[in-house]
Amino acid sequence: MNIPAQLVIGSQIYNKLLEQEKEKFKLYKKYNNFNLSEWFGDNYFYDDEDLMAFWGVKNLNDINGSVYIRKFDNLSREDEKFWRSLSLNGDQIKIYWC
Image 1 (spheres, helix red, strand yellow):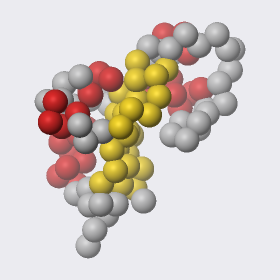
Image 2 (image 1 turned 90 degrees about the horizontal axis):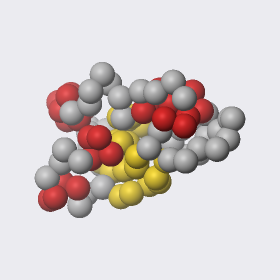
Image 3 (image 1 turned 30 degrees about the vertical axis):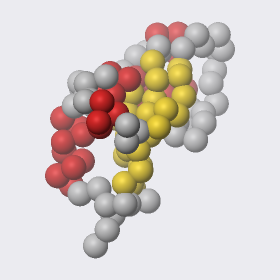
Image 4 (image 1 turned 90 degrees about the vertical axis):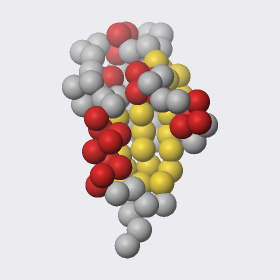
C-alpha cells in the first residue's frame, strides 16, 4: 500500500543533507523580515502560531530561513522516523499525509 505524503523541512534540516538529496527538494519560500504584527498563513502553515511552532521560536521576527518541500509517492514509517531524527527538538519538520 502506497502512502503519499509531502515533507516540509526548514533550512536547518536541509543544510544537513548531501547535495544529491537536496536536489529532490523544491524551495517553497524564504521566511524572514516579518514586519507584521500578525501573519495569516499560506499553503503549509495555518497561522502565525503554526509558523512559529515550526521554527521553534516565540516571535515572528525571530524567523529567518527557508522552507523546502518534497513529495513522496510512498513515505514509510521508517522514512518518517529518519526525517524526524534530523530535527532538533522536533522543529522545522512537518509531514502532510495525502
